[in-house]
Length: 125
Image (cartoon, rainbow, N blue to C red):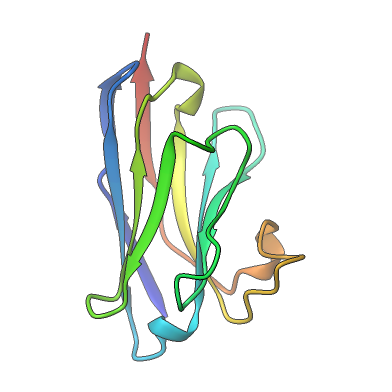
């Protein structure tokens, strides 16, 4: 599975962005898909995840109520709709694919088998 993330950019606080992650490979619709982010000087952290059948989804507390993860298996694409953006949301956002989607591990980076290259989101105050 190869992943290509896009949709990042510069946005003012309070604004919205939608990230997309296109996947190659016929097994996309069997994978749990996740979004992670890494802010400057910080470790990569979990943002959201959704199972192949749209079960879940799961969110980090910091984005719950503001971000929405979704997927379209017919287009091999997962989305992250981000609203009410804050300067602290500034980060490189990565999409990732997890073969097993085990609830107890899908918030951890080590559960994911494939990673996209990242797309930068900058939120100005």
